[in-house]
Amino acid sequence: MKKEFTCICCPLGCQITLLDENGELWITGNNCPKGEKYVRDEITNPTRMVTSMVEVIGGDIPVVSVKTKEAIPKDKIMDCIKALKGVKVEAPVQINDVIIENVANTGISIIATKNVAKRQ
Image (cartoon, rainbow, N blue to C red):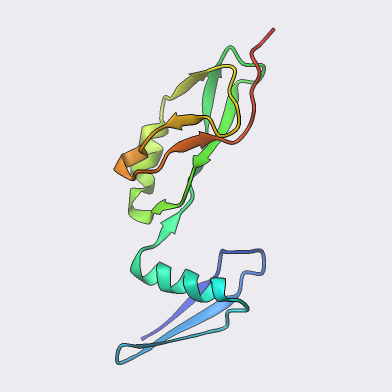
């Protein structure tokens, strides 16, 4: 089996080839060890960061950007997005404030990525 990947670990976007010959994996095209790890993880347990926005009540801006604190399993992305639907937080909000704990039963929190002051 031969499979092509574009590494997402850094801006280089290495084109990496995975060749599986009778269970022996050959990975080529990566410019650093992160690329090899990315491909190995991608074939065994693919994960992604999720980013979004939630409404801020009483903030000096109407929304705050949020993200998963760590990458979550790829098959939990839609559950994570559903959990974020309709979420509202009250100002003030600080970077790294936990918005949702254990999102979609992943053990990973959704955190704020921006400060939002209380409206004057």
